[in-house]
Image (cartoon, rainbow, N blue to C red; front, side, top):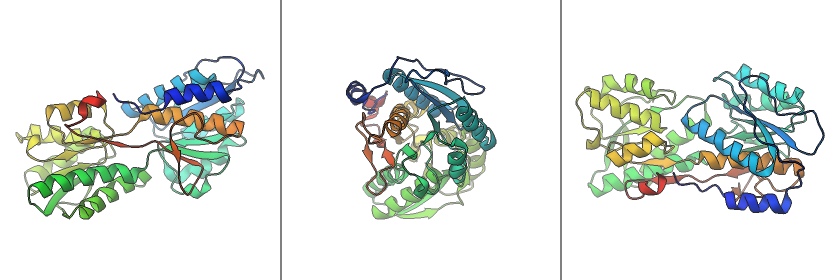
Amino acid sequence: MKKRNGLAMLLTGAMLCGTLAGCGGDTSSDTASTASTGEDDGTLNMTLIMSLRDEFLSALETGAKNAASEVGVNLATQDAQNDTSKLIQYIESARNAGDDAVLVNLVDAETAQQCIDAAGDMKVVFVNRAPSDTSILNENAAFVGSDEMTSGGYQGDFLAEYFTAQGKTDVKYLMLQGTLGLVHTEQRSASVIQHMKDGGLNPIEAAAPLVADYDRANAMDMISPLLSTTEFDCIIANNDAMALGAVEAMKAQGMDPTSIPIVGIDATVDGIQAIKDGTLAMTVFQDPNGQGMGAVMAAKNMIEGTPINQGTDYEVDDENANIVWVPFEPVTPDNVADYE
């Protein structure tokens, strides 16, 4: 799969500005953090805490581990199993173990301040899922992720071009939403509709949005009753898993998923294959390796007092220098080969 994660920049930055002693490898754990060695040899110790371990976040974990290994950071990883209380406990364990930083993939965007409080003197880098209020970010707390308004925007642009070419303006859609309350659910949902409108379409809800929590099985179960009872022109999903659930639901009812555009986000392995098969019209590449690498570098840079995007080719936000953006990229049948 195509990667725009600036590894060459990372290596150059590490050679130019890395002053870490030793060459510690990464560490994985399913219990308390084991990154801290208790020895003051200059090696930085960090813990990555994921909300859960799915295909995308596993790839993010790999990107973080690879980056940590390249720049001599000891990295432990944890799975909070979608439980905020466990996530907070892992942060506290990392702090008690003497870690220098914690990388947090939030379960609930509203709990970011609790995470910062639990971290104490550790640096905190939120990765992939942004705090609901980014004004809490400062020199000790940053966010590395992708601009979710862009992801939904690419979906909307694709649909606008698709239906405009058909001479169609009124477009009835079914939407499969992720977990409510998450920033990326809200922004992906809003931006796709706005870009459809900006592209000259009149998007019309064929039914109320279906909240399938980013899960393929949930999406399949929830959309199945609507397929034969509702008139619709396209299916919009906040991620590939739910889009593929819609594909499976259509196939189960003898319907042809290539007859309408079904769009997703994340460019997962299954999503890419579905585009090649013609059952998914498009997806949007979100770079998990880049986000993992960017989070490690942001934490390292904050500790060393350098710009948080140093050693990467990513840009900081125009209005908040504590945010690093890893760009999204649209994936269609025309360029899908670049992402295999």
